[in-house]
Image 1 (cartoon, rainbow, N blue to C red):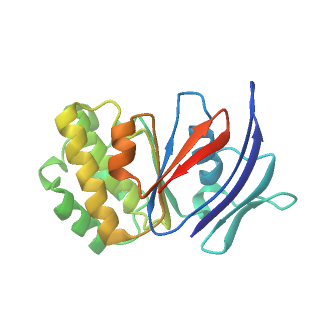
Image 2: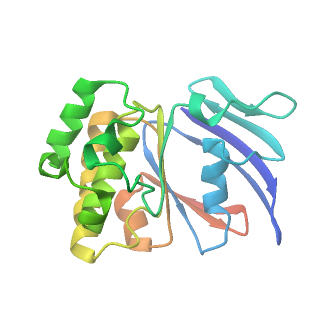
Image 3: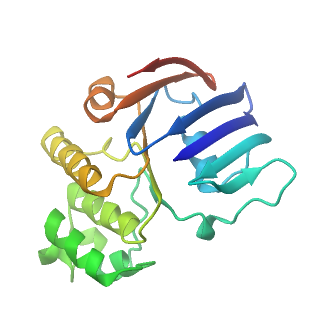
Length: 208
C-alpha cells in the first residue's frame, strides 16, 4: 500500500493532499497545471515535499525531519509522458536496464508481444511500440508501485485503446499500486478503480 501526505508550495498555489493507494489503479484527474505531475514526482523522489510523509508497504520514503530515501532505492516504476527511452540503445538493452529478473522480463516480452522489436532502436519504432517498451522497462525492475504520467496522450485512438487494455491486463496479473495522471475523462473512467479530481493542488472530489 502507498500512503501519502504531501504538502508542497508551488509558484501560484500549494499542494495539500492526503490519499492512499491499495492494489488498485488510481487516476489523478484534472486540468494541466493542477499539481498532478508534482505529486508523482514527490512519490518517485524526484522532488521533495515541504512537509508530510510518503510510505510504501510500510517503508518510509519521505518524512519531514528525516533523510529522504533516494530515488534508486524506492523501488517505484515511473513511465514518463515522453517514455524517456535511451536513443543509443536497442529495445533489448533499454528494457534490460535495471532489470532484476530475466524470467519476468521474458514473460513481459511475450505477454506484450514485442519480441520482434528487440534489435530495433527507439527512433525506428512507432509511438505505441515505444509506450509498450517503456512499460516493460518500468515493470522489469519489479517495482512495488507504478507511476504513469499521461502515458497515452500522444498516441492515436486505436493505439491508445490497445495500450490502455494492455495496462489493465498487466495490472490484473501484477496487482501493485498504480497511479496514472490524465486529463482525459474517458481514459480516467476506463482505467481508474478510483478517480481523484485535483484542482489547484487540492483534492476536490473522489470517485469510486
